[in-house]
Amino acid sequence: MKRFWLLMLALALVVSPSVAQTTSKTGTTAATFLSVGQGSRAIAMGGAFVAVADDASALFWNPAGTARLAASEFLFSHNEWLADMTFDYVASAIPVGNGVLGVSGTFLSMGREVVRTVDQPEGTGEFFDAGSYAMAAGYSMMLTDRFSLGLQGKLVREYIKDCSSTGFALDVGTLFETQWRGLMIGMSISNFGTKMQMAGNDVLVQVDTDPTQEGNNENINANLALDRFDLPLVFRVGLALDLLRGTPNNSLLVSVDDLHPNDNTEAVDVGLEYGLANRFFARVGYKSLFMRDSEEGLTAGAGFNLPVLGSAALGVDYAYQAFGRLEQAHRLSISVRTS
Image 1 (cartoon, rainbow, N blue to C red):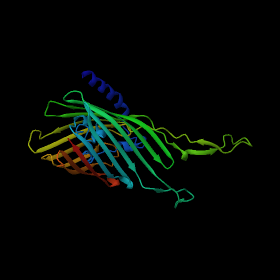
Image 2: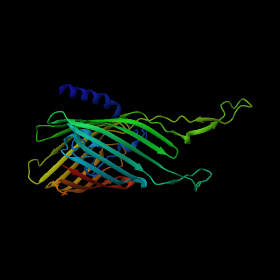
Image 3: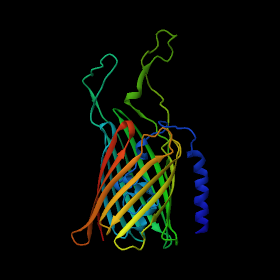
């Protein structure tokens, strides 16, 4: 176990200098939708979830968290995102053998848009689609009664009109429960993978390879060489503690995450969740503290978890997220957990 912790520490030391930035590099990575948090509960807590990670949305925040699930869980989250886009997330965690198998899908989409040109600013009569998605699968397990490890791989794809780009990424996470009042310590590295480069019919051009020579072919097919961009790598480390641990019918969960992204400055997320009888919950948080030029901020939400159909439990969660000049986003998640 000590060797494993030393390995994870060494990996964090290698990754941290590359992801920690003193200046913002927003817009310099591909597939930025991978940075958008998932699950209404986690978002309502300001995204401070790497050390909580106790539901199916842990597949996004910290895949090690699913190892602690004693039952199968399915989660669906819908988000009316910024600029009239929609964001959907589907995740399922199923105990298999000595661990838990997790699969998830993330889908960002927009409505059909009109093709406009300089000569035809009102539209050419054509339409185009654009969007992004990621499909992930992984496995987590308890290495001891207090320490869990999770790993997942994912296929990432973005498209716009007749161009697309594909990449592959890995997520790894750990979660440790200390002996001091059940304090949880979580760590994850997300989106460690390949660069992405757009290619397709829209970058096909016809050129004259030697305009100084007469009689040659002036319409040689060629492709514009678009740049290759990194994925939005992020290193998270966090703490979570139930301040009312041991108190019947009440819980007060406090969580704090420190983020080190490769495309922005470092930031801190904080969250608070009050639970009544493990049935009804109220949440509040603040996202992206200390991040330069951030439009994110206050988050809030509520939810309930009720038994249905015998051993199954239904959860419904809502989250509000402020976005400054971009106004706000609303999320709704539905989960089903079976024994």
